[in-house]
Image 1: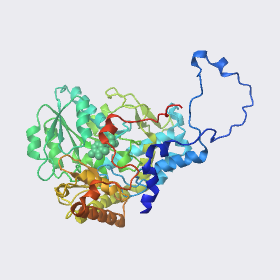
Image 2 (image 1 turned 120 degrees about the vertical axis):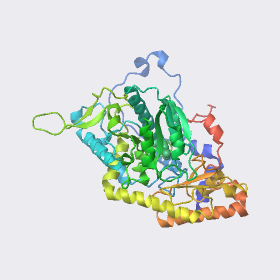
Image 3 (image 1 turned 180 degrees about the horizontal axis):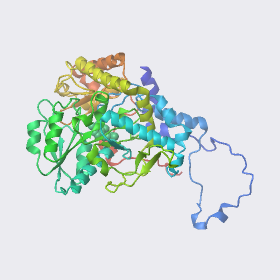
Image 4 (image 1 turned 135 degrees about the vertical axis):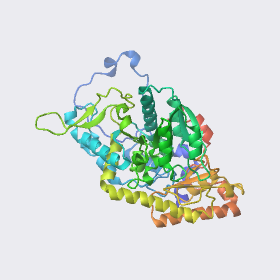
Length: 506
Ligand SMILES: *Cc1c(COP(=O)(O)O)cnc(C)c1O
């Protein structure tokens, strides 16, 4: 039995009772000294109707029981801090711990959003400096930090595009173009903003086809949303012609910045003619994310969209002896703004982590990170393309999309291969996305993995390919070594169990 088996076996045999039924009557995690003051009985403080008939059945646990419970839970899932995590498009790079420590500094962690500007000059300066860094990286002219993830950044961007057209009396533009390789959030965003979505079929090179684009453009076009490199990990080689064509038609171009980590330090959306960009700070700039963890999806715009940015914006007053006003302030005096999209100013702790990461890396470090991300992806591509079909088989950017079409002939699907990878202590690639590749396995190694880790993944993929041919049942019944095997995904989505319910009293 492998060590992995040994440590997970008991958990697997009875997941729920073993994990959640802890403690017992009289177990205590704290010991409070007497209050030292007289307290009136509860009945005198609360009206009768508010009083419980009997004490709530709360778990009673000692401190070691609590610590072991949470430590054990933390070991049931895969994590970047445990092993390779090539989840394409999600950029599961290693997150340096120093970023967390900085975000935890009491001067940041204990701030209150209602403190007056004069008391929060430090964090405002940090946001202002982060904005300058992001502008340098993207080539845009102003940033809003409000959106709390990429998807919300998209919505803000498209609402700004809508406000722009309306401000010019062109509110009849009702269509957003989206390539067929786009992330699902792009279509959802455009729809939510009230637009009609027209999908552009990719060329046989996996890119936006200029002729197809030109045929789709009209006086009804509000804009185009694209990702560059796109979700196939391919750089849109005609990007300048693409943005130019959309602008000629009176539309604007949205850049989904989820793949910015492939080009940062080398190329800038602003120089490619993009009008609005979101960044997934949690992906590109290294905040622990996934499982709904905190994110930040700031949007950066070019000059024509600046007036529409959500308020408030962190703004700097040039220091002058003539004024006692603080140097940094929150500017809400922007009459064309689309409004607020989030309470307060954004997910500050994610901004602090991104700031720490960018300052630590410097311009040179960011460029090296994108180069290494591209190098690592190309290394895996060359090691794997003989085993797994790669429909667009040429030099890629930070990720590439393989297909399990060949393995499917032996009855094994991408889903099964993904499950089998878990047995080897690695996370699976993204599967079944982008939709343009059947049985897609979207692989993004990131720059933080070593050559030996990449080689270990290649070995795993080679072993699994061999199993597909020689013992497909091993793959079809995987995973064998994880605490939970194949949950019913439909049931999990339709009838989610989101809280612990005590067993009936008795
Ligand atoms: C992750 C991702 C998004 C959505 O970003 P969130 O921060 O998860 O909301 C959008 N587009 C692409 C290509 C992505 O990879």
